[in-house]
Image (cartoon, rainbow, N blue to C red; front, side):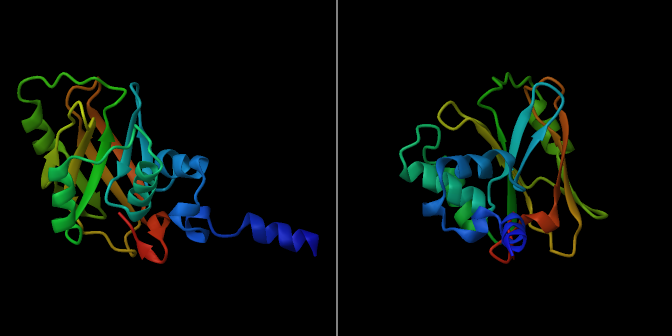
Length: 187
């Protein structure tokens, strides 16, 4: 019987499914923001943290940190917040943390980012639809793509050109089946 209970605990739902965001510990919030299905780290050096900014668990974790008074999670750029509220159903936003990377965007690199950054879902290719550059107050590059992903898709690959970063060409892949939160695909 003890083995059965231990197995239930081991194979139980992840904490983000079992608890409300207000009940998440600081360590659990950190886990959502650094090593959950909605985050990836792109190599090579310098390592770049990427996350699905429009995924509900990411938004819930960031909102909880703001409620707890974290200085690292101030309100996002107001234009970005308005954009998300207007386009939540049609756009996926991939965020790239530039806090540890001080970019110097060479002339023409924004155009190169627009031309080369794309989202691949199966055989479908989607160019980016817009972006919000990092600022000193909000050091996160946010790139939007059409929300053309369903649970029947296996993976989503983002092929990116990140201005101002050594080795700016980065690929990052998310497994779609892992992006379910409270019964819904969250990107």
